[in-house]
Length: 289
Image 1 (tube, rainbow, N blue to C red):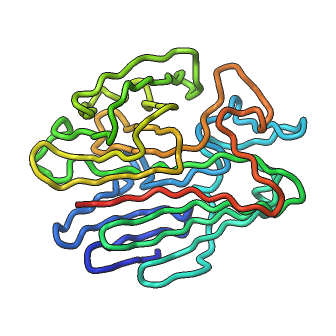
Image 2 (image 1 turned 90 degrees about the horizontal axis):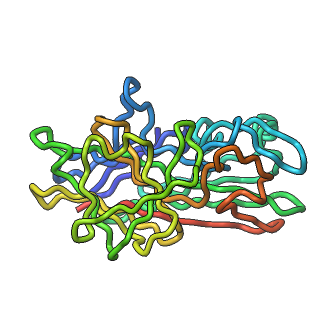
Image 3 (image 1 turned 120 degrees about the horizontal axis):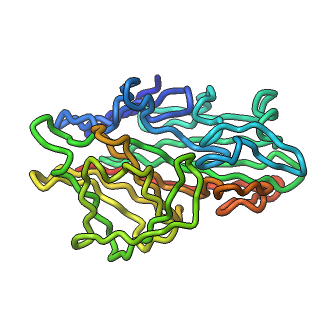
């Protein structure tokens, strides 16, 4: 476990998946990251690569060949190497290997760069194409945050506040986790989406078009808050296990497959292409107040 710390915040990052496992505010003694109760949901903040969501039959199609790849990819299950660190900065690396090549036939390096400053943690995804050809991928974050912050509060005391006025169009997922043709509108209350136990009874809320690039988790009872900024990401998933005491705020670049649709990797919705030798970066940040 790697620890970053300053006067305000202490964070812990696991080498397995380069996963943020703790975000602790010192002056309030608040732990903001879900502590991965295995009976409910055994993750903290998994990193999604080289896909986001699920593939039909768990098959990735590349150059006419099918490769078995689990939901959200293999990065969250992989052991990363710490290649650089200080008290407030850490870089984790996952390079292609014999195991990754069996499910994703590209030579790559995937880095997670964490930097702590004041009360903000920035999380940067960096993909390096080590091939002599274009590679294709998706990536995203899946951080889970404790709700409520304090034991004497209720889940329903909390809301997500968008930084722009929104007419939210939700894209629905099937029971198997694939997109279907269903959409529905979600009405905000003065830019607020109030949390409630049945909000996620039909899986994640997925928004493919958003004006907002910042969402804050707040309570009606006090001024403590957590804000995710995701300027480099064009879509968002919001999810929790029904009746669980957390909410995931997930910046994405990429999507699950459509129902009954098997397409080659370069035809997947939201897929990113990267030229030989080139580098791709995308950053989101977490700030507490």
